[in-house]
Length: 585
Image 1 (cartoon, rainbow, N blue to C red):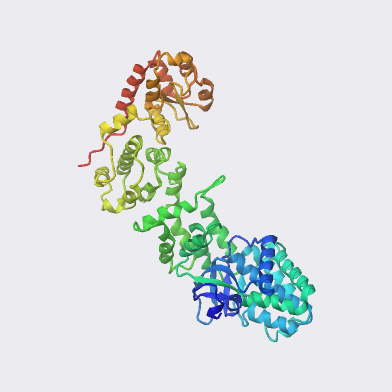
Image 2: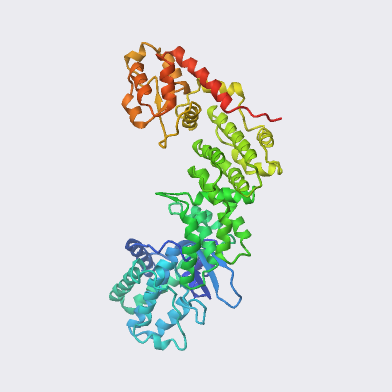
């Protein structure tokens, strides 16, 4: 493309003729989302081409196509995995397929054959397929059907000399009719309409302008993880690929040239069992696994660098199963933290300690350390006693910070390096010493903790439900399967009977403090509303499923500011004992 014809100063801006005429294959990852351009997008591209044909526009820029050159033998064609540009490259390819069919139908088979050999195929034997576009599995049967239609038109096949077309292997998967095939037919209809507008010369002008006056910038990234970042900057309204997409595509690039049956076998027997374990109803936590996993491997990684690092560690692995086996190392440990399960099979008290991390809603910044701890316990590198001490210490650290309203900012730096910082001495005292060594990461003392428990409004704090459940367990209560609703003993919207007991200032100060809160079932919480304490107390005593509510009813005949403050002191004494300040000397 001559410099004066470019719309940008980028030396990689290239017209469509140059993009598709080379000895290159554009490969859409096998499991990529299917082609989905709607009729409206085809109509808009038709209009853009006609602006060039009618000279109301000189050039048309189609944006950036982001690819990654796949390793190949020197004798093979260049293969580019398409990171962004699937829809545009596929559509441009369909325009040229339609142009070849149209020319063959209109008694121009030599011209049609020339277009086909130059832009649609690589004119030599290739192991998989010599089409220049290899779409994902859902679109392969449709593209094969398009090529069948192209070759069956007129006398085209007889004009290809000794050329042998090798179509894409599909193993019968995917329909031969769908969006891709319909768009091919739409483009054929467009060319027929233009024939009626200005004869065969106008059709020549249509595909000629598409090839020579439309351009893209082809960005060949060294590291595919750069693709989504570039994509996101250039296409902010589109849906970028996730790290999970990139990892899946990297794994299946090992078998990209195999027959579909083999690819599908790897998918069903290896990838899907791994992937589906991250699904929980409508929720999928697959993408959130890789950052903590990567930090276990290399604590210096940033989120944007995880894929590139992992990809390098897999450079010598050709079998997808080997990569999935590596990725599965901490899967159970991760799922236990995220879902409160015991996939790892820890003994009862150890499993309970890990589950408390889930109930506490421990920040994800703790995951790299906790995942590795869980795994090291299972292989015998950390004793059960040390592990429980370590988990108790982390729980105390997190609870005290949360009660005092300290945001988890800064914990990422602490926990991603915490394992290495302990230098093989994985004990409670060493861990406490390391946690306290960060001057900028607060660990509240007893005075700060106690004051927050007594006076800080905790109703909306994430830690409060955990505090109430632990209080209930400490008083001998069962552990109901349902998550509790939080009841205000002094209601948030009290009636006049409450106003006689609590002044406005006292209601404002005390309503949302921990001492005014108890766990109840949703049904009981809703039914009690702003009723007086006498009514509430009777219901607490007789019907509450939570032991702490029944204990409160037995301890307090009435509910006044003085009694509420008495309970606050009792709770603060209990909490300081329950989550002690671990010696850090």
